Image (cartoon, one colour):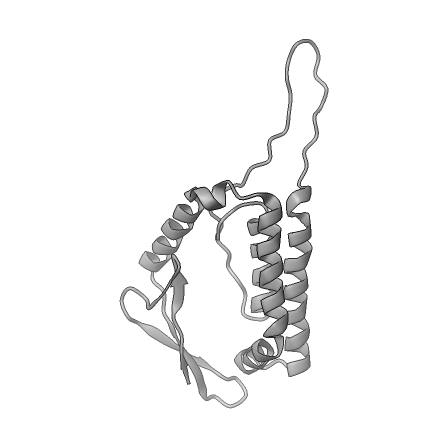
Amino acid sequence: MAEEQMWIGGEWCAAENGDTSDVLNPATGEVMATVPKATAGDVNRCVEASRAALNNADWKSMDPAQRGRILNKMAAVTYAKAKELAVVESSNNGKTFREALSEIRYGAWTLEYFAGLTDKIEGSTIPVPGSRLNYTLRQPLGVTAHIVPWNFPLQLALRSIAPALAAGCTV
């Protein structure tokens, strides 16, 4: 049985109060993992870490094409680990291995798709009368939070996280 931790601010950690929850295999009822039971304080730590990452000069000034390369690396790792992830996904929610594998691969494809858009985010300038200036400025919204349902966890997580990272937001 795996004892998992949360990834916050570049470090593995437990919930601030140490509480955990068991993850049960729905087919067997067996405990397949123990995970931290996050608190509001843990969520606040995540938001603060994400805000610090957003304000980090390396991320803030990163060329969009570099963000695309990072997303492509994430996709490559997801493809490489697809079968391993599909076993976990299948055990976690009772899907067939084949269906879980398809969803994992779709998640990796989603990363590739948004990686390809990072340096293609454009705006348009609308003509205005007189000596006025009108322009579009594209910039990240900032820190983003993502609530992921149980039935397609990785696929739906990546479908919202990938565009946020591509646009320069933090998660």
